[in-house]
Image (tube, rainbow, N blue to C red; front, top):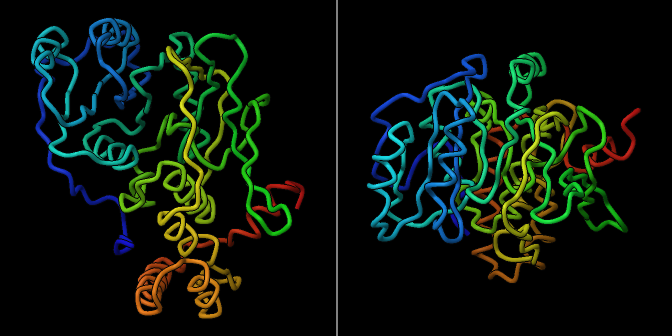
Length: 323
């Protein structure tokens, strides 16, 4: 397991910046939103995508481009001079791409979407920005529509323990302000200052599911909120991609930083009693397991006063919001 970072704010991936030779024509200056576009699949509709984005009035547009030869990128950059393209020199996780993009953003709020999604024009209003400032949440997530049917994607994630096993329950957002454990498919409007203060996504976790789980539990245990604003809407232009939820080596990092942490009413701590459980289930040798456990213990100690509760208490409160 990689050394657990004290923060995911550090940019370790090098990249080349291209474009942004002009500022976008912002018809809705009250939005004051940066748009961060993550790319997956083929980019054959790049021109059409940015034509639609141009009409939405974002004050900044950043596109994270995956490494590899892209002969059309310079042509697209000339056609859309308001877009800032960040061409990565090596592959990295979606979470680290968000870390890089939010670092580059100049606005206080950053809307993260994929290149196979369309944000609703009508939801980007002055009232939206007023709500962002009023609620002051870490992330505001949209109602998401699927590619074909008009039914809403069950994008609200709620944790629950079933016979001591942690399960995720996915529901359709019905009420404004409903809380989600993490942003579904990373999509949402992030409060830049709060995001950076939490350390962002852990770049050492390469499995997207456990990376989002780590971000969600850490953020909520540290007192931040990820909420759905039902007027904010987006839709897929292709099929919804599922997560790999298998128990792999990245789950071990998530376990040590989140599930194993306890809260004593004043701070978080990683008890030594959890070492045996970790060692027996990790499949690692004794000394490797001890090294990884010690790294996690140092991370928890460094951030101990940021914890407001632990995973068990968080899940119980989720099940019974009246507590």
